[in-house]
Amino acid sequence: MTNAQPVRIAMWSGPRNISTAMMRSFENRPDTVVVDEPFYAAYLALTGIDHPMRDAVIAAGETDWRKVVDGLLGPVPDSVSVLYQKHMTHHMIPEIGRDWMDRVTNAFLIRRPENVLGSYVRKREAVTLEDIGFMQQGDLFDRVADALGAAPPVIEARDVLDNPAGTLAALCAAIGIPFSQAMLGWPVGPRDSDGVWGAHWYEAVNASTGFGPPGRDVIDLPDPLRRIADAARPIYERLSAFKVGPVVSDGR
Image 1 (cartoon, rainbow, N blue to C red):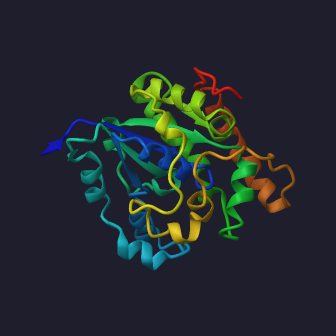
Image 2: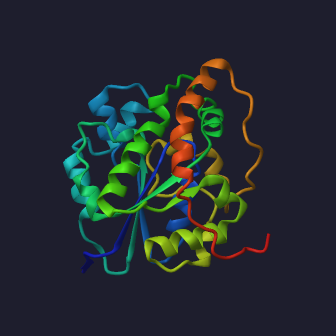
Image 3: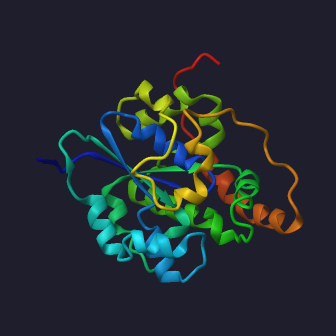
């Protein structure tokens, strides 16, 4: 038996943006299943770009984006009322269609570009503006806002880390699902739902059992990274104006 009408949440972020922790949070809900970066293999196959574990990602994933879409919009088990899709904005290259986005609930996760870059280069030294997805995130946000006639929900990574309960409650209210305390923690270790790339990228989140402290903002970057951050900042600031939450306090 299947449930063809769950709430399908497409969460759009760039890399190194607590996106995997957010996926863990939603997966810990008893009513939710998650999908981890479903367009990654298609993105790599279509662009030819060199990424860590490229061959393994392509071998394990679906390279036909149309089939990916079919899966994202297809039926889910009866016990599932939320399908949470973790998407990377830079995967949405022009060759991949976007009309399917009109059939899901889109939300956006942002983080200061300096912090994104400071984290990214620890895992992949070479980086460009396109790699961190800010420009693509702005384009996707505009597309969704135009279709809705209003801004879609935006949350900030630091807000989630500062006040997980309050920010997640605000997000849940904005997308029309109940908040669950189960979202505030999860068992340690990897998940069967993780993409194969988790072996390279997910070390920290695999060691976690919940959202950690926000830590210090990255301030000093070498000049090449500073120029990328400066180019990304207008998109970050524009989307930041539409942030939701928090609606409750977690007592901090």
